[in-house]
Amino acid sequence: MSARVEMLKDVAPETSAVWYGRLARYAGWLAIGLGFLTLLPTVGADPAWGAFLIVVGLIAQRVTAPTALALYAVMLGWAGLINGLFGRQSMAGALFLATLITALAGAAAYRSGPRLWPAAPGLAWGSLILACTAALTLIAAFGGSLLAFFTGWYFDARVADYLAAAGVHQSVLAVGLAIGAAMQPSSPRWAAVLGAIGAVTGILAYLSLLLLAQG
Image (cartoon, rainbow, N blue to C red):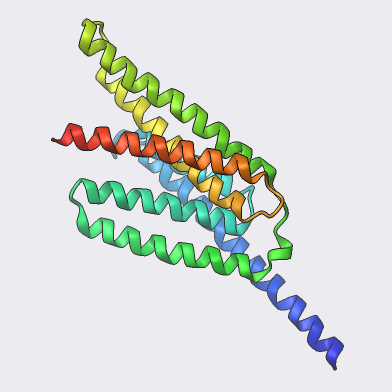
């Protein structure tokens, strides 16, 4: 009898883990679909946001369920923050609620079978690399704009906007990967920590300039 109870205890977490894995994969395909929809000219949305959704959805197909849900939570939280800054409070509130639900689902997914989630050192390194490329992209965007302002050198404002959006979305993705790496015990934590610090710095710089631009 006790052996059967132990077996049921082992099977239940694995069943829950499989369910969370399917949820994460389906949500990833939804993100990919929304990303391609956003890229349509008739929609008129930010192309960088569409590309960001597609990348997150693709990554979610290759990582564990807790990491994928962490990525979704960061993505939704960022969308809620941006909507709040632009005065769309109802949308921001809905997105923050979705962020909370997704974060709770990620925590539940992790608890459903921590021994089932393998080490993923690539997440930590990916966070650090993305933080570095994001910094370079943001420097190119802000530096080009400043150079054009002080020297009169032509620098298309749309290019600067695209670069800035690409840089900040790389930073947001780096934060998500860093959180995902924290869920993998064998990951190089120092790389994830450095990636998170660099990414948050880039996000704060972007938000500061965005608020200054709004006056």
